[in-house]
Amino acid sequence: MTWETVIGLETHVELATRTKIFCSCTTQFGGEPNTHCCPVCTGMPGTLPVLNAKVLEYAVKAGLALGCEITRQSRFDRKNYFYPDLPKAYQISQLYLPIARNGAALIRTQAGEKTVRIHELHMEEDAGKLVHDPWIDQTRADYNRCGVPLIEIVTEPDFHTGEEVIAYLEKLRSTLQYLGVSDCKMQEGSLRCDVNLSVRPLGSEELGTRTEMKNLSSFKAIVRAIRYEAGRQIELLEEGKRVVQETRRWDENKDATFAMRSKENAQDYRYFPDPDLPQLVLSEAYLERLREEQPELAEAKMERYQADWGLPAYDAQMLTGQKALADFFEETVALGAPPKQASNWIMGQVLGQLSARGLEAGDMPLTPKTLARLIALVQTGQLNRNTAVRVFEAVFDTDGDVDAYVREHGLEQVSDAGLVNRAVERVFAANGKSVEDYLSGKEKALGFLVGQVMRELKGRASPQVVNQAVRERLRRCL
Image 1 (cartoon, rainbow, N blue to C red):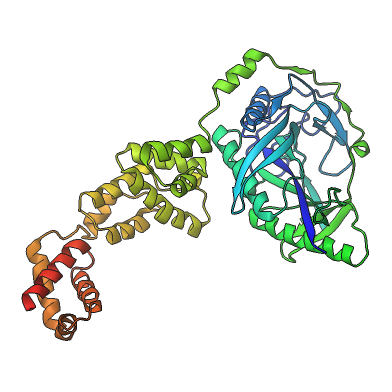
Image 2 (cartoon, rainbow, N blue to C red):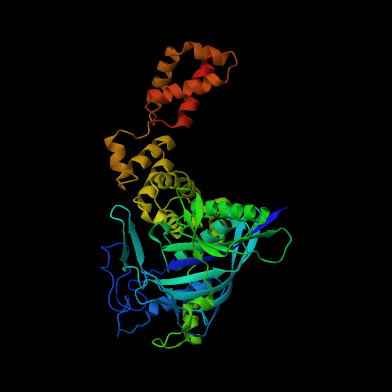
C-alpha cells in the first residue's frame, strides 16, 4: 500500500517587545534564573494583568501580512493545566475569539507553488522553563520566560513533505522579520514549531490518528523528525497495530521520537474567558494605520530587484530571503557598488563566511561600507578579484580598513606594463619546454605560463593584463 503523510503546524513566535505581555518585566534573552520575573508574570495572588499594546499591534501586523481576517472584537481565555513551569496553573491564551483567522501563505518548492491555509493566529503568554540537571538529579524551574509574549500560528493540515514544511517556515520567518515583530531565532527559542503528523492510504480523504512532535530546535531536526515519525506510523499500521494520539519528544542524539504524554483536547484544558482582561475592540482607523505601516515584504522586494536592477530571479530570491541580508545589499548598492557585483559578493563570499561561522546576516561584523569599498577597488583596477577575496577574508571578522590592509601587505595591483613584461621574460626563460609545448599546439601550456607569471608577481597583477602579455610574447616566438 502507498501511504500519504499529512502534516499541520503550530508555530510559536516570540514577539520582539521590550517588556512582557501583561507586565513590565524585560523580555531580554538569558539572564540568571528567576531574575526577569515579578508577581504578575509568576501569578501571585492579588495581581492583575495589563495588556502590552505593542503585543496587540505586532499580532495584528502579522495577521495582515499573512492575509488573515482580523477579529474586530477579540478576547483572552484561560487555558488551565498543572505543570511546574506554569506557576499560576493556567496560561492566558485565545481560543474562542483569536485575533486573526483564515489566512494563507504561498510557498515554492521543487514541485511548484502551493498555498498553505492558516487556520488562526492568536496571542498568548509563554510558560517558564524546566532545567534538568542530571549531575545532582534535580529539576529546577526558571520563570524568566513566563509572560513573554507569543503569537501562535496554526495551519490547516496542508503539508505532505518536509520540504513543504521548511518552505513555509522560511516564508513565515522572512515575513515576520521584515515586519520587525520578531527576530525568529530558533537557537534562542524565538521561533518554535510543533508538528502534527498522521498518515493515510494515498487517495483517502479521511485523516489518520495524529501525533504532535515537540522539541524541534532547527529546520534540519524538523525534516528528520517528520521522516522518522511518518515511517514509525506506517510501520505500526502495516503490522495491524494502531497509532496512539499523543505528544512525542524529538531526541536529536537518538534521531527518534519518544512518547511524552497523551495528547490533550481543548475540553481537557477547561477554557473560559479571562475575567481580568477586557474584550479587545479594534476600530477601522486602528487597522488602517497598521496597514499603512506595513513595510515592503520579500515578494515585492524580489520583484523590484529584478525590475529596477536587472538581477536574475535566483539572485533576488537569495538576497531577499533574510531581511538583514536584503538591507545589507541595498546599503552596499546605495554606497555605489553595481547591483550585480554586490549580489555576486554577497551570495558568494558573504554567505560563505556566515555559513562557516554559523552566523545569521543580522550578526555579521562586516559593514556595507567595507564591502562597497572593496568592490570599488576591484572596479577601478587597484585590486584584482583573487586578491580582493583574500582582503575580504582578512577583514570580515573585524570590519577592518580595506585600504590600510592593502597598503600594509603591499597588495596593490601591478599595473606597470614594464614590470609585467619583465616577469613574463623571466618565466619564459625558466620554462622553455612549456613555451615549446604551446607553439606545438598544446593550448594548456598557456594557462601554465599565465599562472607562473601571476605567481612571479605574487598574484597582484590583473589576470587579463598578464594573459595579454603572455600571448603577445608567444606571438613573437612564432
